[in-house]
Image (cartoon, rainbow, N blue to C red; front, side):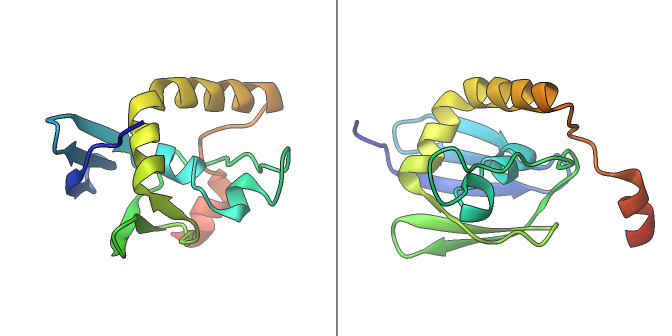
Length: 128
């Protein structure tokens, strides 16, 4: 699959979204929450098949910083402290093209585990 060239990246902190524009005219918006819960890091994916860790309580997560890494990836720093895992151009484009499928799978996994997208209120109150 020939991945188009990413030409523009914009972080919209207020709406908690990242817009990505490609040289073929395609434009996508990815929610910060989706990027966080599908981070390519070992913390999220685990170190092998079947070791993924379901990310919960990330509904309000935002991005603090986006840094290009060479000519192949982005390093994203989230406001919950997560900053490991590099979002390669291929992985970002895959997320863009399949975000509804991945989001539905994530919501299904949350439901199966009895987990929530909402942060733990007791933790939020301690932070504030």
